Image 1 (cartoon, rainbow, N blue to C red):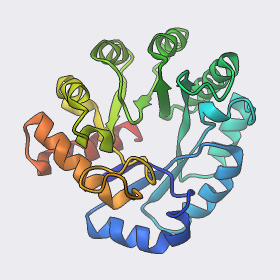
Image 2: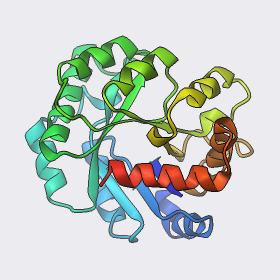
Image 3: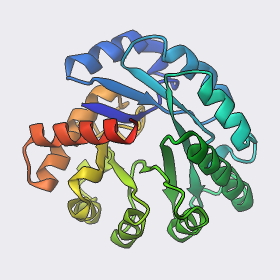
Image 4: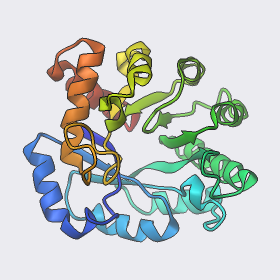
Length: 252
């Protein structure tokens, strides 16, 4: 299995990283992608990728932080090129639910991340909340640029899926799909092609059932895998095989 999105730089994961890695390996995880959200968090990520062969990282500024951490594509490219275990750009995108950053700041930051992703030809990890229309408008500016899009912790509509598939997007399922009130989201994931699916924890947040409400960690991705296999009506082994292959294809 591969946890395609976790935040190992956050407590309590960072403070117990040795045991977190140990438990991840015990359940069969072969890669952990730890996601950058701020300039400061990247300093921890550079340390984390040295901790173990299974840990890889990204560079990016979360939309919540777009007002504080200003970056351009040149800065992003430089940081990625300086470390061969930094394999993606993000988490970037748009969040008009909380609006912690101004809308224009979020869009500007998002577009700079996209430009870097195109120049480096590596995947873009995208956060989109209450911003389906605006996210598609931004992507449309870069049509025919061979975007490599990963929609992380996807909770969007079927219509959003159909539009994103026209850009070749991949979709990552989090523990949210295990929640009792997520029936509509489960139906949406049922409709997504198997070759476009990944799994993630978003740990230390969003622990899946049966650990909902607890601190999440990468080893819990097995519960999300089990639920997604049930939704897709395939064996757990097939689900793991396909999502692992999809990650490796996307991240080359």
